[in-house]
Image (cartoon, rainbow, N blue to C red; front, top):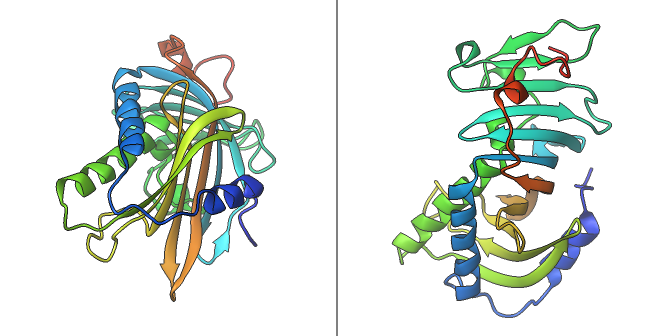
Length: 246
């Protein structure tokens, strides 16, 4: 099974502006990354929809769609709205519930509390639940970029793809081949990063790993309908909220 999430757009991005790669991040990419850093620094709350598809354990898992509320640093409420796991709800707050996720699968299934990095919570997912945070993912990209900037011996290769519309959001996109062989802390062998021209945060992140000399796509995350600092309250992260099913 191939990744189906926005596949036509992905093909266009990977073929666009196929000039010679730039060994250093071009100024336009650096400027967008710094704008994302500023946007992440001022974000306190957000609502958005995450479209996620991943490869794990030899298979591509079904695309998931989640309506998400986020409060800095890591408070998350998530509700699955797509075909996969429709109606599932998840609540996570650091320091609450002994650090466990609270998950409801619906009225007929008991609510459970799970270790966020345990086998059950991670089954079918490459990342812990908190990486559904647009803030966390943005910070992870920035941290990897900072490592590359600090060490000229690390040979990344960039292609600036210019402005691309991602699910209706004009975004600055670039592709980078990362020096995983030199620095195993780099996230993946290849990444695609798109940042909103409007709010500065991520609109898309995709990643590939080399397997037997062939690049395999392992992740595709698209962030849509992003509202920055909508003024969420404690009730939005309360399991006793009457609108929730915990």
